Length: 143
Image 1: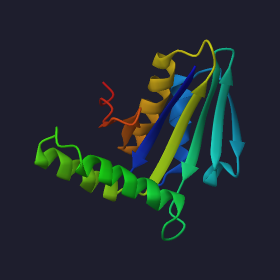
Image 2 (image 1 turned 180 degrees about the horizontal axis):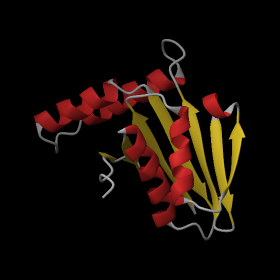
Image 3 (image 1 turned 180 degrees about the vertical axis):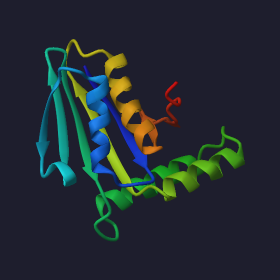
């Protein structure tokens, strides 16, 4: 199994990754880079591995800019969505300051665990999750 999504965040907050620990108790965490400025954070258990990859703007036409432009173009072409919804989505994507790619790999890692971890980080960041290249999903507020 290989599950992927991207979190579109209006803020850069590397400390927010700590919220994932709350929903993955007992999972071992490994950083690449400094904890306050990590480039990758991996959570490992017997269920598998979840990796969160950080991507920020570095200059015109960098990977970050290309992803934002591509996502905006995707929603612009979505004729099945009301025009107001498309405008809202494009506005949100345009305000993205931090992208966090999430990859889960394992034969036994459930999609539920994967989404729980991704949605928890998105909730903490007031972000949205782009799942399977289809829609930006807002996490439900914590009750």
